[in-house]
Image (cartoon, rainbow, N blue to C red; front, side):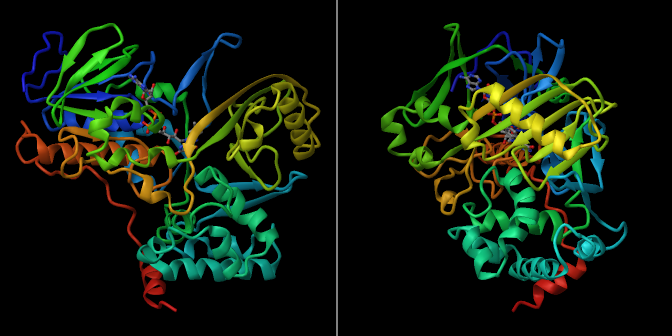
Length: 478
Ligand SMILES: Cc1cc2nc3c(=O)[nH]c(=O)nc-3n(C[C@H](O)[C@H](O)[C@H](O)COP(=O)(O)OP(=O)(O)OC[C@H]3O[C@@H](n4cnc5c(N)ncnc54)[C@H](O)[C@@H]3O)c2cc1C
């Protein structure tokens, strides 16, 4: 295949790889492919990188606002690895104490005891978690023990079961679901607790709380999301460059056509756009031979609402808080004084078409109840609703998620990356980064790598290790 692009800004000299889409999946794929010596070009239609995890300029406040607060956790090993590659790991602030507030603003914390291995580290906090009664705490701990004993293999078998059924089987009461499971799961999975697949719900608890003492630590970017991408993942990054077509000859992608009419040739293409945009790139006859595209329309999209709220006086001192009662499910402090807050509602189906004024009225009322001592008035709000924020991890959805590498008989040099691909993670920044690394790994198996020793190289950073008490408990399966 010919490679001709005189405007290629890459310093590498190997085969030419085009990455379409500069969200976290595309950034991760480009960074990993670049490290193998390929000539990588990253094409992004917007004026900035980051896709759904990025920011926009708010003309009224002249500030960069995130489209929505993005949270990472200690168990997001690959996202942290990407931040290191991009030289921004120090921009993430970590919190070892997770705050919860009830409707009247009473505070309950979960924290891990430093130095104690999992799951013992959370023991003292769980025993004292007075948001639920002592009997309810026992109820939760029994369920946590059952999750530990399942291990990773056990949770895989529950992929097709709704977590609601699992909770009923394990006698978890409605109050415990509202005060413990909902604040953790709805935001982590962007789905109602009972509707989500048990595999993904249990994965959250295993990876975040039960296996390793660092898994639960909450990371919040200390800057606008967009600023995390100022260090480019490869030399040739083209922003404001919309791809309008992928070109094919036989079972091979030969390059792309840009909206401007320019064509770029390639030895391989990594398609890192969101799943809605994927099917239309692929002609019918190729779709028929490549099973990765067969079920994408079965993935259900779920909205997330983010509310930027400006008050005239300080409201919240805490950096963050999970809320037992809605409508807002999480609150984040966005300035030093606590006058600017950001609220989030995940699985926000009912909110997608609500008038913004009505939303603001309800949020202000909720915040007044949460912070009765504050006489702050809401000066301004900016509400962003991403209608297709993520796909829903419903039972059975794994069968619809495509692999990054082509199947036998598929499009030989077209790789997929994106939070929706098969990563074994729910749709999160971590999933997006894993998908990019997996796509680059698959690429090295197909295309000769200019840098020696990179063929079949895995870029995936392993999960945090399961610590010895968790391992012991897992081995004592019921
Ligand atoms: C409101 C909201 C809140 C969230 N909160 C969290 C959170 O707290 N924690 C967490 O881990 N995850 C969160 N997520 C999920 C996370 O943002 C995504 O999982 C992740 O960013 C997806 O990355 P991606 O690269 O797979 O896709 P995207 O970010 O969608 O990237 C695809 C890119 O392709 C580009 N593109 C599309 N078409 C073209 C074209 N024709 N030519 C060139 N480029 C094109 C797009 O502009 C985009 O930049 C949230 C998502 C949303 C929407």
